Image (cartoon, rainbow, N blue to C red; front, side, top):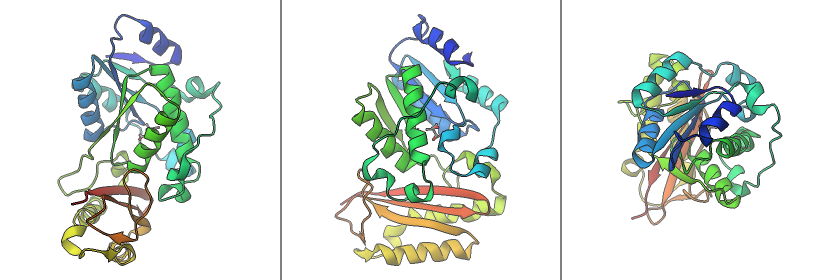
Length: 281
Ligand code: PAF
């Protein structure tokens, strides 16, 4: 695996004969887990060259303590990537990557007005900026993102489409722990008890069909989800049932609509998100 520590080293690799297209790329912020490795495996299956970037992007953190406490585990990340057969790892320092970079302002349409948007001002602009920058340096043919960050995936698809970037965005299903908890780098900061309780929340938002009758108002479901969160000592941010493409919220849980149940809450100092698809029947 080639380890590239600067944009200049990356540029030389991208021009070299080792960089065979199609190229599959997995942007990450490190502290890698099985979810990331699944993305890499998919990238390897579909491309001739497959690699990963690790960069804890300061532009997308609206909360200083979330940024400072973001887990870093580079030695283990490198080991996991080598084992999984990555062809390259781009792991730049902030000064190298962002020194000359003034992030543009992206038109994120209404995708930024719902769910994470109001809770994390500037977050998706920061994500769009770094992903765009990484795409321009790595020049991948395909890029892989987990559906766990559902709104992020919608924002990246929108940005790629509106800017006509020559990259295919591949969304991959959320990888879960045995208890249903969606894998996330932030889970490392949870206690075993919090992990168990958060698993129960994930199971609940994935079993709404079994619990609520057809056309239940979203507000009724939200109240029950919030009650379950509070019962476990968690603090809710939001629960929404939204259109999976436009993210527009639905006021009814109707089986005539494809809906994504999306949730964000705080488990102590850690903020968790998750989502589950309900396809129309
Ligand atoms: O999902 C992430 O890890 C990050 O938001 C991403 C896409 C790597 C951009 O920093």
